[in-house]
Amino acid sequence: MGRASKREQIAQAAFEQFHERGFNATGISDITTAAGVPKGSFYNHFPSKEAGALEALSRYADTLRFDLLTTPGRPPLERLRAHFEYLSRDTVDNGFVRGCLVGNFGAEVADHNDEIRSAVRSGFAQWASRLGQVLAEAKEAGDVDGSLDVDSTALFILSAWEGTLIAARADKSAAPVDAFFRTVFDVVLR
Amino acid sequence: MGRASKREQIAQAAFEQFHERGFNATGISDITTAAGVPKGSFYNHFPSKEAGALEALSRYADTLRFDLLTTPGRPPLERLRAHFEYLSRDTVDNGFVRGCLVGNFGAEVADHNDEIRSAVRSGFAQWASRLGQVLAEAKEAGDVDGSLDVDSTALFILSAWEGTLIAARADKSAAPVDAFFRTVFDVVLR
Image (cartoon, rainbow over all chains, first blue to last red; front, side, top):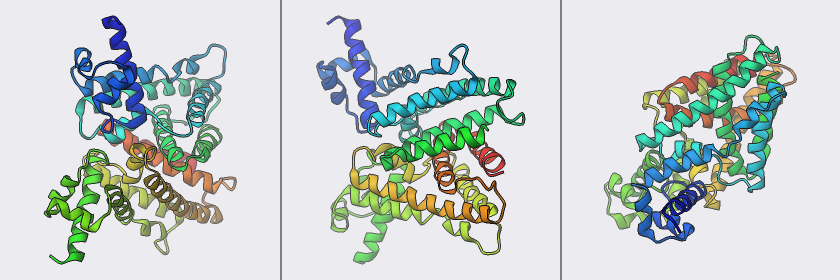
């Protein structure tokens, strides 16, 4: 196994372990065991557990299907719905576990590690900005109330999504997800 | 120190440590050190760390000022706002750390411990039911749209609040809290 593919294997295992177990419950040996590499090799590729967590966050962002927010020829609110429907299916299909890695690190680690907090913050900011762009298009097209505060609403919808995943994991049911879609699309964006 | 007051001291320290550090980052010795008791004494009062966490959740629920939701002679939506304004002040005054213990345990522990998941679930359910009662009164009084789905909206507002706290901790700013109030009170409950 070459150096690059070993790093790739460790990074992918770190992402999966952090997402499944959380930050503090994940040991370096959980990551190296999952990657099938010797324990010491982690530190050949990452200076610290935190560095592995930052890489995991960036890998997680790549799974969020932001492309669904910009599908050409589709109305803005349909694109917004497709994005959250994709994320919902992912949660339902996984049996309501794991949730969102950005939110999980936000809840568990942000208070205690400034580098991770900063990565969580910019993860949220970039995500909210993409949602805001779609809302701005919807407003431009007259699909939502003209008085809608686009940035504030985008931030709110993202926060609501994060909390929805936590409630769905606790309830092991889609009820919080259904409540999210009902209120966001039928009330907030009517 | 009598047995009852020792238990009380350990329980209070457990609540504070779990809230500050999270579940996995809290060791029994963090709790007993904070309580000023010998490490072994934890297990004289609690069978396990999980049992301490369940007690912490119940103590946390007692701090949520549910009484503000039922203040006599005050309109329902004002009571709802007072409840969340109290919780917001608490977060702002604490420098945007700690968040909600129910949500934190939901994000960190619910996937891995069924007893804690079940306590988080019933914590959310009871909270949402209290919010739903206020919304039902508001609907009855004609203060919100007659088509409002009370239970679904209550569940959504609680999820949104949980996510809002995570975003505020990551951002170390009140922007997510402001977005919560703007969308919930000016849009959802208009």
